[in-house]
Length: 149
Image 1 (spheres, rainbow, N blue to C red):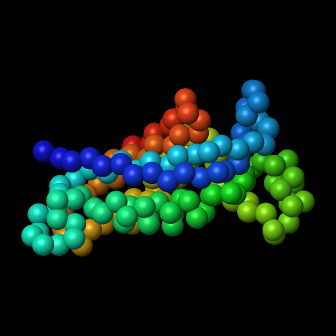
Image 2: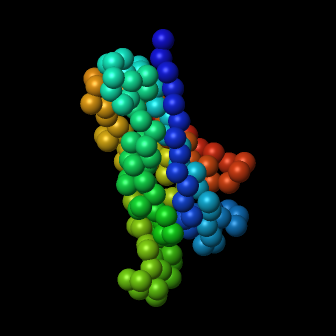
């Protein structure tokens, strides 16, 4: 038997897909939802704060905030190979939050990036089995991407 929990954070983040055949090639933004899906065994140590939990939801939030939210919220994600995008953002100077990615910032690629950023930090102090199953990235209310290892 295993238990699964989910916790998410949201960000307001801009991007563009420079080689897209349609309107996504233009600079635009989304209200992204970054959702971690975690499975494992509940903590059985009597009397501890996490008894009956996989991990405290607030601990998951702290990880999501530090390794996703605080990096991309109110920032513009630009592919390092997008010369036009880089030039346009350069005009804004250091006052602008620009995050240069080594990949085209699609929802699919961002889900993998977020998984790799979060996974090493997901731990508990009680030795219970804990595993990041997936990161789900919602780009629009109708569009999600998921990365599973």
